[in-house]
Amino acid sequence: MSVHLDGNALAGPLAEVFAADVTTARLRCASCGDVAALARAMVYGGPMGAVVRCGNCDDVLLVFVQAPDHSSITMQGASWLHIDR
Amino acid sequence: LAVDRLPDGEVSPYLVDDLMVGDELEVRGPLGGWFVWRPEGVSTVPSRTQPGGAQEQPLAEPVQLIGGGSGIVPLIAMMRAHRTAGSAAPFRLLYSVRTPDDAFFRDELDRPDRGTDVTMLYTRRAPDGSPRPPGRITEADLTRYAFAAEEKPNVFVCGPTGFVEAVSRALVAQGHDPQRVKTERFGGL
Figure 1 (cartoon, rainbow over the protein chains, first blue to last red):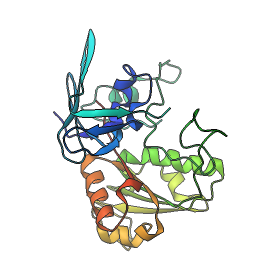
Figure 2 (figure 1 turned 120 degrees about the vertical axis):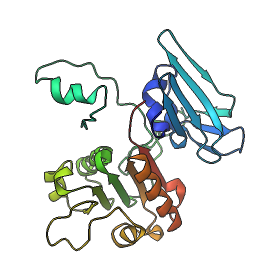
Figure 3 (figure 1 turned 90 degrees about the vertical axis):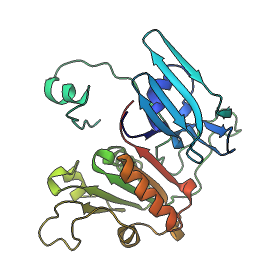
Figure 4 (figure 1 turned 120 degrees about the horizontal axis):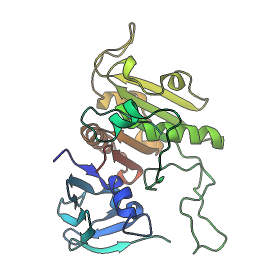
């Protein structure tokens, strides 16, 4: 695993899943309550996807898995996702 | 578009070494609207919900760009957008790079537009007669060359993760509002 990046790096991979640009969307961390753009989150990439951690408390916000035949996202660490229209 | 050839990269060595003029590529994007500067008078959010159309930025706020290595790439795009829009926003760039030979867009940076101030910070070797000894960017560099926190600049920092985190910590320590400091750690997933 290389050094972590930030939520900007998810713009491409998540464009395959979400209709909107999620990097500008705001997430509320279920652990510390911090509300921030996904671009401000810390992203730890691996061969199968990424673990996304809160930029404030470092708890896991979401886990994104990209396999050859499917994508999956767990969002247990985010209590809401706010997308501007 | 700029491509930095990473020796252990999957795509960049192909783009730099193998791709020939005339070859066709399929390109997706641009993607990601967060690390973006928009000139004054241009909508910050393409809004359908606001009567009367888009929200406007209030005034031409100063913009501080801070780049390390190939982190200059999105910043040069902002400088070009600034020029194209004829924006009145005062721009300053601090560009940290190993040696003069390592600088991207050197010709363009040697002749910046009016209203744009460029400071090169060399980490390994500076040109002869350079007043600043080579070294990584410091708080003293920010104090000396960057907009002060009181001037309320919008700050964009792009570079390797260690660079971005050192610079953003120093900016916040100097009183910059973290909400005005946008960062992008370069690399791909």
